[in-house]
Length: 242
Ligand code: TMP
Ligand code: ASP
Image 1 (cartoon, rainbow, N blue to C red):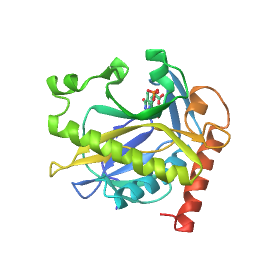
Image 2 (cartoon, protein in one colour):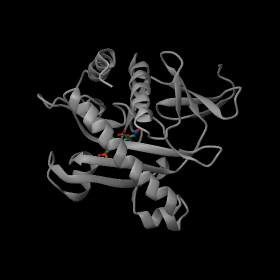
Image 3 (tube, protein in one colour):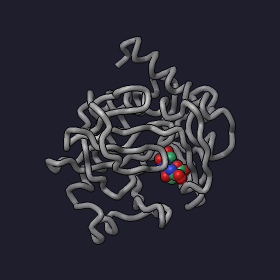
């Protein structure tokens, strides 16, 4: 399957049409951005690692019964996905307090939450992706009530599947962001990517940051952290751990 018409370019990916009206090709870019693209860089090999990591995690999530847009990885930087119309809401699930949660509410960093916290953000770069409530989403038509219920249910299931999986890799899944889309048949699917760009991963033993916080906070060796995540995922794939 080949790339046809260019459709859209985001901060970390490009999307193309294919011969099949229901499928798209995603190309993973090396660019890295933070703080709504105020900080930018490009790291050779980052796109490939995110493609490998996200493909593997979407396969795991599909095996666990989560409906996703993922069809298959084509090569190092491309994957085929079902064409969806993206719900303009970014869903963040948090297990441990950090990041914008601590900044916004002044709560202590590094606390394990009694249960996962689900937050909704409006996907709007011009507004800086503001935190919204369910009522905002419903009253302004950004999602339906049925979609919101499913989104929360899937987000929590993704959290339990991935938390258990990463525990086996000696990694703590601190928090992550998901996006959802609706396909041609009206089905709600998990979309976008699940990678060190969109998750916070802490090494269980050293608490080393193995994700994009290395770039956000200038901690150094961003690529090494992404490689370490892929090293642990690929060795668990070889062990047949999943
Ligand atoms: P936050 O603490 O900055 O709100 O981030 C929460 C999680 O969401 C974290 O795992 C990083 C991820 N995230 C994205 O994937 N994209 C974004 O634009 C932001 C702000 C966060
Ligand atoms: N993805 C967002 C940006 O570019 C923010 C982030 O992940 O921190 O700018």
